[in-house]
Image 1 (spheres, rainbow, N blue to C red):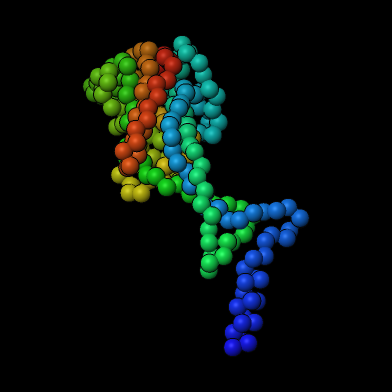
Image 2 (cartoon, helix red, strand yellow):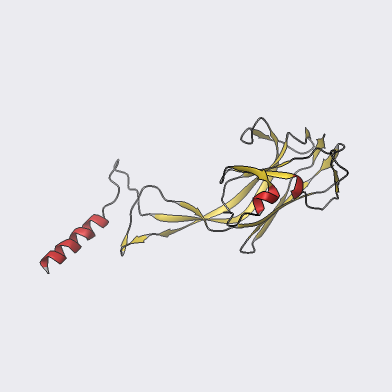
Length: 200
């Protein structure tokens, strides 16, 4: 009986030790959850890579291959202390975990988008998803938007993502893009970019 009591007391003492690295109080392990509460975005000019871009204002003219839409999910962070073996656990680095999943991302234009390479015309208000690619840093992928959306369990992270046209327009036109962002739990968010003139 005394041996069992000693083991229990030793375990209690060991489980209640906190971080002792540099004297800072690391606190308890809190699993922090990302809760998407909105989305915003802007037009960007893309350089040689998706991480090389500058925000552009209304009325600018860009080639379709230089143009991108930078979408920025807005998130609230919720935490829940982790209990290990009946005791509060301690650590220095909380884990951020997306808890929601993306159901749909859709891109629309205020003007017709006629493809130069074919006779296909996307009318104003039609989805442009077939000619959009996405760079999503949470997964690190660059793929066509339809291919991206067929995956199950798409985590709704708080990382910005970039959308870009893959097909040249037949002619120059002024566009204002609207992006819809819907989560599996039914939450729906959208934003509309400033007007931009796209040229082939």
